[in-house]
Image (cartoon, rainbow, N blue to C red; front, top):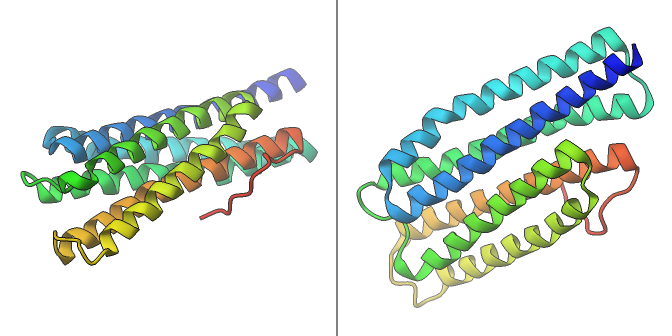
Length: 220
């Protein structure tokens, strides 16, 4: 019986890992659509978002089934509850990638990004996807080193976000108000995506090991 229950917990974590894989791919493609005015790729991200929603529903169904039928306690209970929170946050990561893709579609065929901020958004996309790939390892296998390095990656995203805000608010900004609003929102989407990744990693690692990574990060 215990072996079967452990297998169910492993399956639940595998489902969450599959969700993270989906949202990593979503952000990678969304960034590509943003950088290259790629309407087809933007449409792919938008249409594929339902896969993330369905994956969340399946993970939650599994978790509630374990709560109802197995009545877990102690560490097992914490894992199931953490999985419920994680599924919500991972879905939110997918939604943030969706917002990026919708911005690319909305402005097509015009570019969303002025040339002087393109490198910053390219970097945001790279770091967010790297965060998600590390999160997948944490979710699937309690990778403490990956969880710790997630915090450093999140700090990098925060720094890029702050620098972009400084550029946009500078008196020499020459692209007007509407692009400034778009870019502020887009930068925030990337920042929140990273925050959710860190939150999930810290929660999943803590329930198993009882230890948090050194840095702190608030849920969003």
